[in-house]
Length: 78
Image: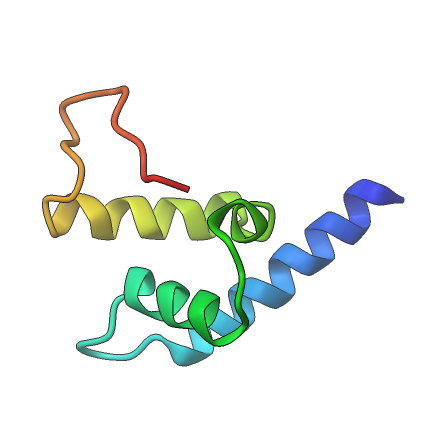
């Protein structure tokens, strides 16, 4: 039951974020704005990020050179 609730929350969060992302506005920017608006800490958001959303954020971070794709240990500060 706990896992299903977590998956549901992750899906809901992803739908919210996907709805706010547009050309010129990144996943990282949208999530940062969401955190500020809702007064959330990174550790609270971390639980809401699904593997699919994490992959999109990671690809974006590599694109913007925030992390190096060659370094397997590179992670976003979440």
